Image (cartoon, rainbow, N blue to C red; front, side):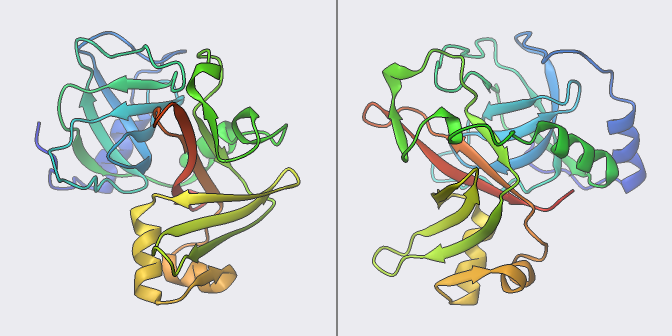
Length: 239
């Protein structure tokens, strides 16, 4: 499937989303055509709201070697599930594999999206992903913990750039914790590079991003040397 397609009109995208047949659960039929609203995208996985069920799903996309994932927040994309969707990663129970690159249909935002995000936002009822610190051993996972959390931060978020290695970090307060996460959101990283500052927050951050960040999309990585790591894969507006 082609990676990009010319955007249809806003009316056509709205019609697609609003007329989407609804399900109570995610379609996991091998080879099925699926539609998602992008929340965050890296080469490891793309996090979407499944348009048929409004559940969070992580798509493993076979990006070409040396290609950087370039799907943007609130892109509407169409994909096809692989014959083996690989539902065997106990640290990422929401993850499924696509057979090919997704097709970008356009973008969608507004009141309906705001409602979805409010509904799927993680409640402040404990430590992020159920454990303290930046990572946890893979053997501790049993497929029962979510690997995605959409956070409405108590304070922040703040973007910081480390001078020693040039990495970008997101800092925010949540449920009494001062959370620092490596940022893998390409738009946020480019924002820091363009601003040429070591810290952005509040109005300065909103101006640089082009929107007020309301949510922090956090995900768990695949196993790296036996551990799964927390990271920020998206800063999102209200909708």
